[in-house]
Amino acid sequence: MDDKQTMTEMENSIIDAARRVFVEKGYVATSMGDIAIEAGIGRTTLNYYFRTKERLFESVFEQLMNYLLPNIGSIIEEEGSFWDKLEKIVSLYIDTIKTFPGFPAFIIGELNRDPDHLYRVLLKNPQKIKPVLKLQELVETNMKEGRIRKIPIIFVVSTFLGLAIFPFLAETPLTDLFLKGNKEAFDRFTQERKRYIVEIMKSFLHPQK
Image (cartoon, rainbow, N blue to C red; front, side, top):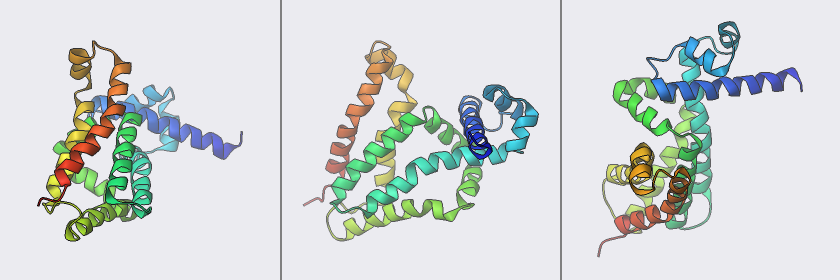
């Protein structure tokens, strides 16, 4: 294993540890010492790879964006109907949330605490948000052409996010109350729910006569 590969693996290990601590404690309450302990390394080693907590937060957020946004962009560019693309985006979104458990709650908490912080991180690389703009353009174009219902896009986004994210925010009570505490049953539920989200969005967005 060469030095470059070793460094990359260490960086990824630190980013994973930082994500877990950020999710558990929130950005403000997290210290570099907390992250070093979670990563199983000393502060000197941590500072060698990441000098500041802000840089680590940027790396954690970038990791999530790298999973989600480029793939959304590729789905939008594919051949197929709006509904075909919607189904693939729903599946991608749910799978991404499952890959980063706890992250939706963390992001919502940070947006409520200091929205400018997240906006600054996003705007450091404007190219990252191009897929989001393409998705908005796709929705608006299909509205103009009468393929989907013409409504303010905030209703489309908020409805989709509510359907996709809420079960993960309420995972523990949903699992305890309805699935007898069975975590595997919750995983199956989230996979099966993809189909229902698509059906609900289709019903919601279908052009009204």
